[in-house]
Length: 87
Image 1 (tube, rainbow, N blue to C red):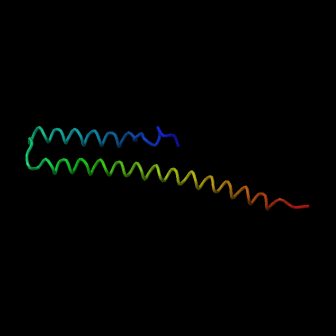
Image 2 (image 1 turned 90 degrees about the vertical axis):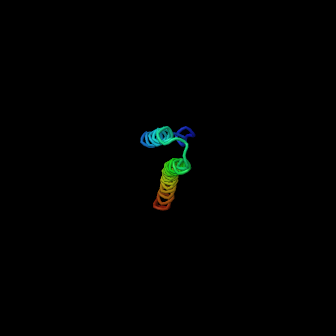
């Protein structure tokens, strides 16, 4: 996997991050800097963290699948060697 692929977000995650940020900024302008600001910041950070965790889990699953595929091909090669008749 290239480093570019591991750093890029899928389009829906980017949309959710941008939408959450826009709603966060709108709530600041509508409500102002009140005692609810830490709550709004917390909601934004939790949303961001969940999206980043999902991306990391997806990347981890892809890497595991690639490793399992490589292991499977190696085992097939070993089985093929033992299946050949010996003279």
